[in-house]
Amino acid sequence: MNYSEGELAFYPGCSLDGLGKAYKKSSELVSKDLGIVMNEIVDYNCCGATEVKTVSYDLSVFLPGRNLALAKEMGSKAVVAPCNGCVFSLGRANKAITEDEATKSRMNEYLGKAGAPSYEGDVEVKHIIEVIYQQAGLDAVRKRVKKPLTGLRVACYYGCLYTRPKIYTGAGSGERDNPEHPHFMDDLMEAIGAETVEYPLKTVCCGGGHAIADREVSVGFSASILNEAARLNADFVVTMCPLGQMNIEANIPMIEKQYGREIVRPVVYFTQLMALAFGHSRREARLADNFSDAGKVLHSKGF
Amino acid sequence: MPIHEKHLIEKQKIIQKDSAELEGRDVSGQWNIFIQQRILSQYHPSMADEIASTPDGRTINRCWQCGTCTSGCCMHTDFGLREFNPRYFIYLAKIGDEEELKKYKDVIWRCLACNKCVERCPKDVRVEEVIHAIDGYMRKKGWMDDTPASRWDDEYVGNVLKTGILDEIMLLRNYIRDEEMKEFNAGYMMRMGMNMLKTGRLRTGPIRHRTKGWKKVRKVAEEILEKDGYELQ
Ligand code: SF4
Ligand code: SF4
Image 1 (spheres, rainbow over the protein chains, first blue to last red):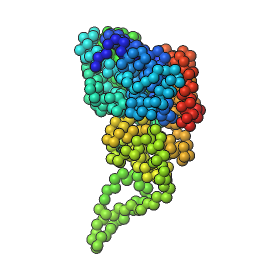
Image 2: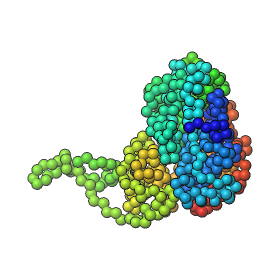
Image 3: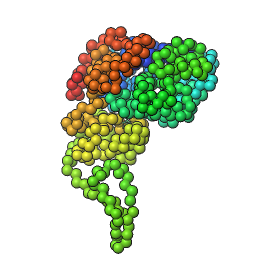
Image 4: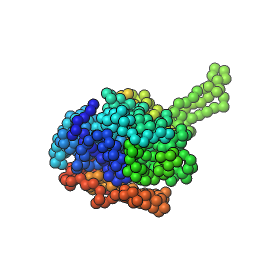
């Protein structure tokens, strides 16, 4: 489904204001180039991620619910989030509000008290990759390419919560991505001239939920994600999840120590590579933000 | 006879004989392994009801024990921690087996909330939420202390409630300090800090996005937490 101007609200979430700056800037470049207009929800708050819901169910619906209510008030039909965790929380709040009347009335009571508009669970939630894929389309992406990334091999890492679970994200229905075997990012990477590898760990968890609380798991998963990409001769791991990107890259020093430098691959956002292909400089795509040496790898491939 | 999910049985309960005879015939190799009977003593019929009455645990009774969740669980299968078995946790909670459930107090908190189980469950059990409901129940009963994950969540909630959005640098700093994590030594922190400083990402405190009118929202959030019996740390 295509949206007309003013119907898409943008929800940056917490990570894009801080550590995910490269994602924010490169997403802005790419959306602008493709003519996608989104209006930021001004006074948004944290979506609660997966942490708040272990503490209080109601709070974990209220926090994302407030953002959705604000988007509705702006006249939006859909909220676009760039982060898998946000897509999950917002979608889960929609489900909680629409599947149970009692929850809906409790939420509206809270929203009223907090000075927010009321909400019926009827604003769609979309990941930014879906909007780029559907609103602009692969043909428009192909046409916009100035410097195709020919010769670059990438492993597309989608992470857990982009499509999972379909009861929250709607994956698998209509034109949405496949819940167990997503392909939107692979298609986009091919459209900008890169070569994708058949990557079995596309939707494995990176351990980011317990990035610090459970080091064994977070380093272990990060290492296998890199190791598999290295085994398949990929130059980059490309992702769309800010938590995954941060988690894997911040684990690189430990991974180098435990498993050796050979398996390390830079983890970049898909929008960073798209921005490069659209003719923006490495600086504009903020490749220096990566802890790993993304610039060096590009250089060695002749870019 | 092979025993499936052998790790679920206490080692001393498995009896393996060198040879076994049945009606005068040697049947060793097939029938020489036995499992000693187990008697449930700490049994709480109310456990399942109590868990089912929480919002997180409300779907527990839909479970028909097919094991789909465990078969693909990130912790169980991908990471290979066989003791982490969501189907079994649900089974134990449903029969109310305190003694057995307590054995998993150092394991159950490790659920990563990856939601593969929720995606695949054929009965629409919100498995991941149910696992957290069981974890919460065990902590509430005092069967286990707070866990690395629950301490992280506490820190997270307190952080978010301050201004409405997460200050991830403060979250990391406080947690690493409180848990005395040696792995993140001065060298590591310097390296990461310098990179973030150079690229303008060391955003913490007042320069972050602010949610206007947050005070009012915060008050509602605090009321919700109080209603749910949660004390802000
Ligand atoms: S997949 Fe669902 S029904 Fe099957 S054991 Fe797990 S929770 Fe129960
Ligand atoms: S959410 Fe937890 S229980 Fe479910 S598959 Fe992931 S780690 Fe396993």
